[in-house]
Length: 430
Image 1 (spheres, rainbow, N blue to C red):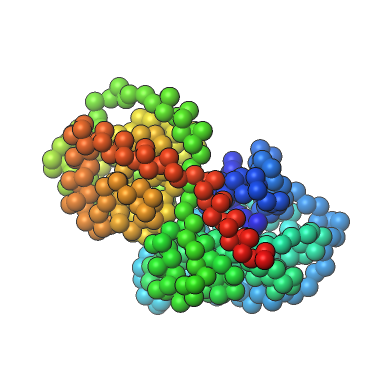
Image 2: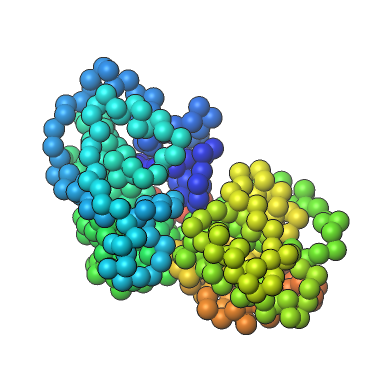
């Protein structure tokens, strides 16, 4: 299995999903997970984790040579602002896109630099493509000493390595899609990342999007054969849910708290937060919007909130670690996720596990497994405001939705995700 993020070092849902899937699969398969940077606290019960940052590159275990997908390193335009993935977060034309980018040629680092590259604090950053190419080279050569039957790769950052492994060792490859360039950028997404995603899905034996919503995006924009696309929904750890519900506490504040958790980017619908707040505050003022996350739209949102006269109703907490996220969820009243394009939305499952009602966009894959959350199209801020008002003021509605979602979440487990994946593994192994 090829991954990029892994607990305890997380920047988004990708690492949490990789941990959940790998942990559940390791109970039924002999699983080795390879990631660029392993933290000393990283564990995989029943499986093995290899962090490339821990390898000694002075002892040459691989041979330097070109590989089939090296052409992807030739990137001309790189966005000047980098988010979790190195992409633009605005739906703009090609000319406007290139004006906002810097011109750069990605170079594959020398072997002597690999240790330094894999140990960088930020596992993404402006040199993400450089890390991807280094990861690909090391993984492909390291695999010569391994015995494996199937290659399972998570998102575009590991797909070059997966394609090269399939080409070199003639082993089946499954591409797990947690997010697409289309989600992050919009319809203008014909970048190198888009090309990597498309090439990988074409090369893969199976494609596992995290929702039917993402499957439909793949069919619409990437033109991949539907017969090899099988959605695998994410899950949640139910032992953790039980512990959390025993810790549920009442907020001492009279203010009702609406929580937004995520990157403040175009994709997450951050631009609709303020307008929803303006409309909601016309009905009730005893409200506080809790914003947990960073992103390229943070300054824009703050300025817009000032212009609209609602800045005092917002609290900006920046990026929060897992412990802080749990604490803030326990103190919140409603979880709000107005994403423009959300392949799944693990944070909504987290919210439900904290007995929080959820308001989300129709464009979120999590609505497929939580049908009883309140939904509206991402642009319908009026409906969002009405839903939020109702949940904050009608206790019966809130109680009923929490009860319904609690029933739904009982069937959403990483074990179920692993069982579905294992079914397709068996088909590949025949």
